[in-house]
Image 1: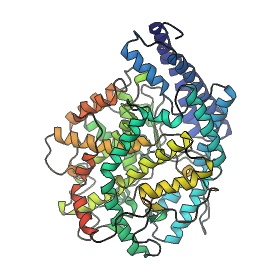
Image 2: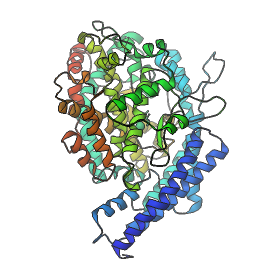
Image 3: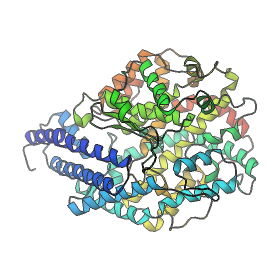
Image 4: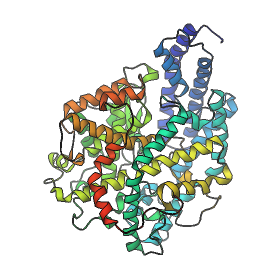
Length: 581
Ligand code: X8Z
Ligand code: ZN
C-alpha cells in the first residue's frame, strides 16, 4: 500500500473532478468537430485529445488501485471504482502506443463514416443512409444482395487495424487490473463480470421463445414471398431480406407481413411527409413530449449547435448520438435525420439521453452518468413506447385512434422492431468479449461472427464470406469502440419502465395502448431516477422506479402476450428454429 488511504483517495477524486473534467470537455469538443467535419486534421485533433484523457485516467486509476481503502468513505470508494470504469477504452501508458490506439479508433471510425457504394446503374456513390433507405423499400432479392454486399465491403480494410486495436486496448485494460477490455466492459454493472454475463444470458433465455416464434412467422412469410430456395422453410433467414442492413430490426418489411385481418393500420412516415414536418420540427415534437411530463425546455444552444441534417460538401459521421459537451447544459444531438417513423423514434431516443444528462448535472463529475448504460439507452425508447395511436391523435397527427381490432398489426410492427432486435443486441458483445479474451483470434473473426449470427438470430449471409471480410466492422459500434450490451439491456428495461409507469398510473388496459404523454407524475418518477445519476448501484435506481431490484424480461413478454398468442396460431405446423442454434 503506497499511501494513507483517505487522503490519497481524496486527492485522486479532486484531481479527477477538476483536471479530468477539463480534459474530457476538450476531448468532447474535438470529437464533435471531428464527427461533424471528418478530415485528416480533425482526426488528429480528436485522437490527441482522446489520448490525453485516456492517459490521465489510466494514471489516476493506477494510483487509485494502490490506495488502502480502509477508512475511505463509501462514496469516495464508489467514485474510485467508477473512475477505473469511466472509459470504454484504456490505452497502454506508453505514449506512442497510446496515440497509436487513439489513431486506430479514429481511423476505423472515419472509414465507417466515409463508407460509400455505387449500385449498378446509379449515377453516384451512395452513403449508408441511401443504401439503408433502399434496403428498407426494395423487395428485389438481387438488388438487396448487391446493397448488402456493397456496404459490407466497408469492414475489410479495418481488419488489420481492428486486431492491433484489440491488442493495445487489452494492454491498457490490463495495466489497470482488468483481465482484458471485455472484462472491463462487463465490470460496469455493480456485480462481478462473470455474474453479469450470466444475467444477460438469463434475460435472453426469458425472451428466446418469443423471438423464435416471431422468427418462424417471418420466415414462413418470406419463404412464400421469395420462394423456398432462397428462404428455406426450416433454415436461417438470409440477412439481406429483413429490411435492415444488419437484420437488427425488421419493421421495414412489415408491409409484406401485415396480417390481412388487421390491415396496415396507419403509416406514420407517410403522415409526417404529408404534413411537411421537417427535421427541426420532428425534434420539436419530441421535445414537446418531454415537456408534457414536466421536463424543462432544451437550452437555446441545443437548437443552435445540434446537427439535424447531413451537411453538403463535407464528411460527417451520421450515426445518431447525443452529447453533453460541458457536462452541464451544452446539450446537442448529431443526426442526419430522415423524416420517417423510424427516425422519429431515434429522435426520442437521443433526446432521452439529453434529458437524462441534464438531470444528473448536479452530481459530482464521476457520478454524471446513468445508473448503468442500459438505463441511458432505455429512456428515450421508454418515451417512444408512449407514442400510441391515442397520443398521435392528441397531437393531431392522426384523425382518430384506430379501432383495437387493428392491434395485431400494431403489435406485430412493434415486435419487428423490439423483439427482432434482442439477439442482435446480445451477440455483438458476446462476440467482442471473446475477441478481447483471446478465445477468438483474427483467423476466426468473420466465421465466428456468422456462427453467432446464426446461433442467436437465425440468419445467414446472403453470399459466401471469408476471412478476407470483416463484417463486424460494418456495424458502427465496432469501429467506434462503443459497447453494445447496453442496447440489449435497454430493450428489456424500457418495457420494465413502461409497465411500472402504467401500473403506478392505475392503467388496466393493454400495455401497448398506455402513454405517459402529459402525465406529470410519471415524469416526476423518471426525473427522480435520472437525478441519482450513477451515485448509487443501479438496482437502487431500478427499485425507485419499478419496485424491483432485478432486470426482468417479463414486462416485454406481458407487452407482447396478445401477439404471441396470435403468432403461435399463425405458425401452427410450421417449422420452428433452425440448425445450428
Ligand atoms: O446506436 C444506437 C443509438 C445511438 S445513441 C442511435 N442504437 C443502436 C443501433 O443503432 O444499433 C439505438 C438502438 C440500437
Ligand atoms: Zn443511445
